[in-house]
Each structure stands twice: as C-alpha cells, then as structure tokens.
Image 1 (cartoon, rainbow, N blue to C red):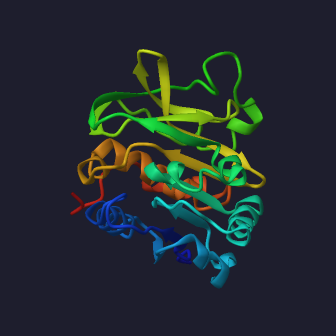
Image 2 (cartoon, rainbow, N blue to C red):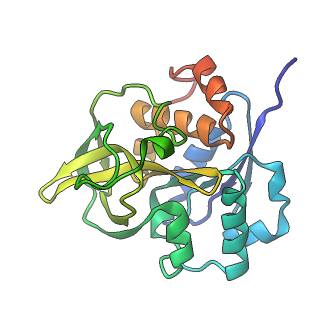
Length: 244
C-alpha cells in the first residue's frame, strides 16, 4: 500500500530577510522532496487558525520580532506532543524576547559579521565542547543516527553566533578564533524533534548540495515520528533529479 505523503507546514515571510528569492528557492525545493506535501503560510500567528494535528512537521524560515503568547503556546504544544520542527537561519534571530521560543529551538542568535566564506565540518560531538551535552539516550532520538557522512564544505554566507543549550546534539561546526561554533544541531523537546541550520541567508547557500543533503535528511526525520527514519534510509541521500 502506498504511504500517505508527509504534511509539512512551512512558515516563511519577509522580502529582505530572508529575501524573497531565498524563500522561493527553499520552498520550491522542499516541495520536490519525495512523499512530502508542503503548505506555506506567511506568519506564526496563523498557527492559531490551522489544525496543526494535520501536520508531521513545521519549517520556520522567517525573521519576525514578535510572536503572541497564544501562537507560541500552539507551537510548543505541537512539538511537545511529537511534531517535528525544522528552523533555518534567521529563525534563530526571531522572537528573541520570548525565552519560551529559545527553549524550544535550543538557542538564539546573538550577532553576525559581514557575509563571507567559511568552512563547515561534521562532528559527532554533543553539546558545547566543554564537557556538557546530550545524553546517549537523547541523542538516539535526535537526528544523530540518521545523517550520513558529509565531507567538509565551504559556503559564503552570514556566520551566525549563538547562545545555545549545551544539551543540543551538534552535527556541524565552523572553526572560529574563539573555537568551534555550531551551525547545525538537533534536540528533543518533549516528544518532538527539533533541528536548526544556521546558514541560509543567500540563495546560493540554499542551493549548495551539502546544505540540501542536510536539509533533506532533517526534513524526512523531523517530519515527526521515530518510524520515519526507515523512510529516510529508503530514499538515501542523492540529489533529486532536476533540482539546482
């Protein structure tokens, strides 16, 4: 029997940050993922007008200053009850005055410098590289067991510096003068999985094969429940035909 497509709710708005071309690029590509049906809305307040139980995961690619307490509670309940959350780039710079949002995401944006090139490498380390980190039990239910080996790669993008939870499972870092800075992590929030990817300011970054590979794996696994991992393995990690 053919399985039902995963329902992914994409919340993405703005014209400058994220730019309209970047938003269109990401949403159009996600719609090409196997067995995935994408529904897009422009703002987080729409969470109050949607039956969230229809969806397996929510993707955030936006830059907004405010989210109401009710909309934040709806997002929190969705993830706590087993829904997946995928946050990209400026999602970490959104709702910074809401500590409840940062608690779901596992961190928040602090600052960035000018756009420039930086290298990204995969790590199997957890936490803040200073002895803290996710327990093996928690890591087993994040994205950790599912990501394939990805060779180091370079992007030209904003380098976000974050304040983040030491219990995050860090998947990718870039090496800075102050030490390794996480650029991708996952975590558990209640029964749900959360994944965050920092690069994503430029359209070219979102077209990078390694970035797409990471997002593909995250998109399939985060689309909620643990059994989805088998679907991930079935589809593998190659680039979808016709996607640039």
